Each structure stands twice: as structure tokens, then as C-alpha cells.
Amino acid sequence: MAAQGHRGRFAPTPSGPLHFGSLVAALGSHLEARASGGEWLVRIEDVDPPRVVSGAADDILRTLEAFGFEWDGPVMYQSRRGGAYEVALDRLLRLDRVYPCTCSRKFLAERARRGVDGPVYPGTCRARRPGALQAALRLRVPTGRIVFEDGLQGRIACEVSRECGDFVLRRADGVWSYQLAVVVDDAEQGITHVVRGADLLASTPRQILLQRLLGLPTPAYLHLPVVLDPHGDKLSKQTLAERVDARAPLPALQAALAFLGMPTDRSVTTVAEFWSMARAVWSPTRLPPVRGKRLPPACLD
Image 1 (spheres, one colour):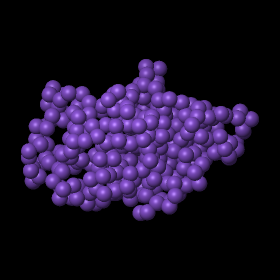
Image 2 (spheres, rainbow, N blue to C red):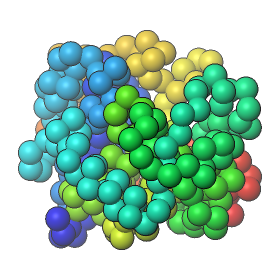
Image 3 (tube, rainbow, N blue to C red):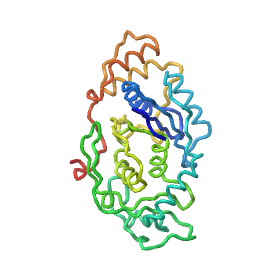
Image 4 (tube, helix red, strand yellow):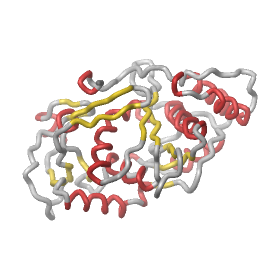
């Protein structure tokens, strides 16, 4: 699908209700799209069945509506996109970029060094050829740096083979990887600008690499500050972050806007007034710096 102008998206995982950290990401991506006169889409990233909580996707959508978010077009569900991911995998197979891997997580924990986002695969199965073996499928990552300009972090230059290694495209149980799914879906939806939390910054070089191998366009990226808990960890469903209250959206919206460094107007009394005010004050130049976990110095050019 060809994008017309600015097209952004919000892509939550339905592993629980919408919490404040996700609200911040949704607000930033929505305002960046609307301030540019562009479109804003919603995608449910339910590609990993064990993480999906029954009813959570519908609950998230209802919460977004209660908070005044409006999106363009139908909601995309990754769980219905297996055929598209299979086509992308076949293309990578034809490029001789895929191999089967039977290494266990225990093996990797014991043998692999740490990279920017977990263990760096040591290449144990790299010489294997694709076949009928039930195994994870990994991308044979080429050498060379991936360089891009993040809208907040600045210039990023990452040697994916060294900092991430050969990463999984499809698990041994048949579940598609986030990295492959998000690349295929962003291209299908014509996404031109990805605005999301800085916790996903380490994924971006891998996604750009996949885009290049698959001949897909690369969006502009802007990684927002992440909401942290009192221990300095990312606020998330896994850390039992509380859901936002759909019955009283205005205080949470005001707090999210302030977290993103934008001026707020406490005289605003309705959700409609909030959105009018928020679009008027939004500017990425006001965003505060990212705190907490960052890429290693070698990746920050």
C-alpha cells in the first residue's frame, strides 16, 4: 500500500489493559501524525499467542475510544497475517539468508555474550541448510553498520551482526517474530513515520536491515521517552502497571502530555478541549531526553 503523506500507527500488544506507559506512546504517535496533517492507524500485535490475554484487544480499543483517540481505517491484527509473513520468509530463503537453529535458551544463556538486546547468537547452527527439521529459523545477518537518524536520539549506527547477531524470524513452535511481523505490517500499511517508546530503539537496526533485504521502504523513526517505575524499570504489564481509568480520561491525558514535555492547560475541562489544545502545543523539539536503558556508546554516533 502506498502512503499518502504522513502515516503513523500505534501497535499495542494485547497482553493486558492499556496502562500509562502505553498511553504516552499512543499520545505521542497520534499527535505527531495529526500535527502533520497525516493519518494514524491502530494495529494489534497479537502475533505471540502465549502473551495474548483474552478480551484485552477489545478492551484496549474501547479505552482508546474513551480517551478520544480516532484512527483511520480498519484495525489490523497480526494473528491474521501469517500468509504475508510466509511470503517474506520465502523471499529471504531465496536470498539464502535463513537457516534452522535448534539451540535452546539454556544453551544461549550459557554460551552467548550479551548484546544490546539480549544474548548474541554465537552462530552454532549457521552452516545448516533449510529443511524439514523442526527448528527456529534465523536470519543470517550480513556484516556492516545500519545507520539512521532518530528524531530524538540523533544519529544511530549499529553493527547488527556484532550487537544483535543472527536473530529469529520464526520460532520452533511456529510463532512469527516481532521483528519480521512489524516490518511486513509497516510496509503493508504504508507507514511513513514510526513513533514509539525508546525501549524499542534497539530493535530498529534489525528492522531496517530486514526492510533492505526485502526491498521495503524505511519509515522515519522517533523514539519517545519511556515511563519508568520507582526502580527505574520500564512501566509495563509485566511489572503490573495499573490500567488507565477510562471513566476519567482527562487527568491521565494531561499527565501523559506533561510527561512528553508539552505545556498543559489546566483550564481544559473536556476531552475534546484537551485534543484541540494538545495538537496546538505539540512539537517534537520539546520532548525530554530519554532516561534509563540506552544503546551502548558504540551505537550512538
